Length: 380
Image (cartoon, rainbow, N blue to C red; front, side):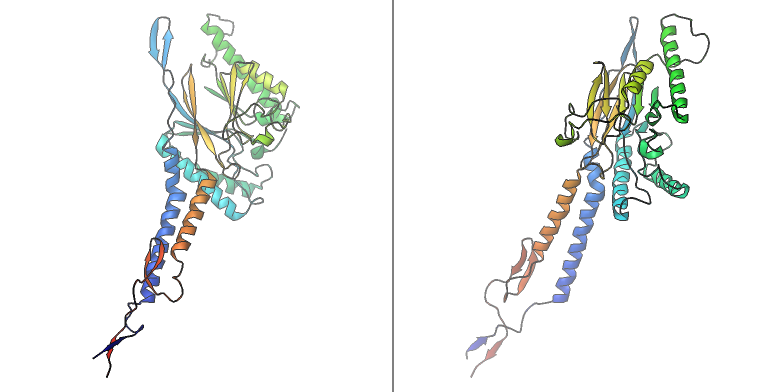
């Protein structure tokens, strides 16, 4: 008796079960992708950052002593969006990125103090009191920190407007036009300069300053939002410097940088050993008078840069060492998202027409091999 094989009938074909498995796999892939790109990637990037080593040995005469080291983080230009500018999704995305980066850095690096060098907010100069209160509340949530970590903020032009042993200077108030906050800031700087000079004089045995509180005799670190005067970013280099086509654009005094006069006053009054500033959103290192280094700190926001970063400083009363910690690049995160999407789309492509699927394998849908077998029927 002969048998006939039919091409239909007995097929292990469960479309609902297969679709359910595909949906579960898709959910698992999306979850893993979000977990990596929105959480774990910050640990992967910041884990590679280390505090720079600094010389801690100081000599008092012939006796060597070990100086304490302060671990400080410096970041700038977070530009939290307010109620007027930017799309709500852009605001949500950028604030999540900065919060995750900051909280991860606190947990991994354990700094003792964090300085934000101005432009914390993007719309502070025209915010209503209600909007300002909301912005401040969001800032406090994003940059929350343990009680043993100090957070210090320098005013920037977007925070208070363009009126036109750290020394933190409100550089926005150094326009020299006699305005209220300008006169007050200048008087305070003169007083600080006087006390610094008295400390230096008394260390040399002079008693001209008389009684009164003294400041440490070590040269201060100057922190401010505006950079000291420089013509442009033409001499700046590095991955996070300004784009090449922008580096030769001349800077405008009291807008892009401090005026020559204000810069000379600060250098003369304070005689700093190091200057750290923000405002330009790009990195740059310059030397003023051939001896005072200034480092412009890039923006901490992905809205301003594809590759944000922050500065890590190991600082003693007489020395310092700096290093830079890069955060995840925006284009890398987008490539990961797009690559995962294309791969998952390829996996879910249907089999060739007329070929039923056996499995949804790693290379996409795998067709059943060999002849299609159905039930056998007797023939007369």
